[in-house]
Amino acid sequence: MYQPSYLDSMPRSARSWAPPSPHPAAGEVDVHAALGVDAQFVLMLDAYRPHGGLARLRELETSLLLRVDEPPEMLHAWVRNEQVFAFEWAGEAWMPLFQLASATMLPREDVRAIASELRATHDPFAIAAWFTRPHACLGGASPLIRLAQDDLGVVLAARRSARARSPMR
Image (cartoon, rainbow, N blue to C red; front, side, top):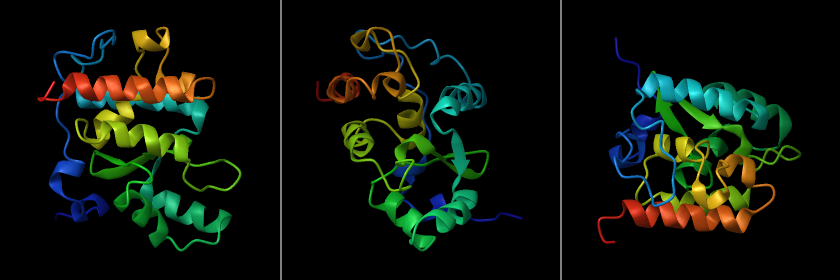
């Protein structure tokens, strides 16, 4: 029996997964493109672990309620309003926790700005994967690693990736 997920309420374009572009942005190292979705998810689990990890939205609602004075619906509003991104894998909605400030559990503006650069050309799964992949324009580091030292550089890398995937280039 089918059980609807939270992401069912989002437009299909915002929740569907498509394989990464066979032509990564100039300077991007895209060794993950040939991997299946499950293998990419496992790589993301490992990459996000030192940065707060990945959490299922349904479990995050409970823990978020305990940490801030926000109703559980607020998390869904953040996703809907593109303050944070979440993606679907194995019938569950997942969210990288680095998007929330650890002290307040509120969305980080720097991450929101970077994700907004990618939204037109990357689906939510691809955005989550993008943060974990090495990029030549970031010295071979992933945006997740470089964000703390060079948020402007990561914004520019996102813009470059989006432009490389755009059909209007």
